[in-house]
Image (cartoon, rainbow, N blue to C red; front, side, top):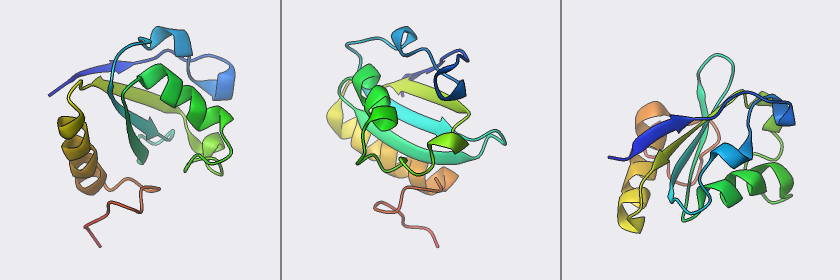
Length: 106
């Protein structure tokens, strides 16, 4: 599996410095609240751009929940098939609150 990396707290939405996320790495993005509950899991070929889009884009799945995000974790996974598998597994194993399209638990 990939390597987990957490970014430091800053003033943008209270938590992240986008420049600490590598520009050219693919992988998984995990958004957590202050209680360490998993809010949303996403995947991307380029992590930095995708994280920024989640906080700038009006069509992001977390657009109405951005104020709940306290911490972001990224996991580097370069293979696209592995990203798909890990995303689905994490969503279901950790029961991500706002991922509704890949939910197999009830």
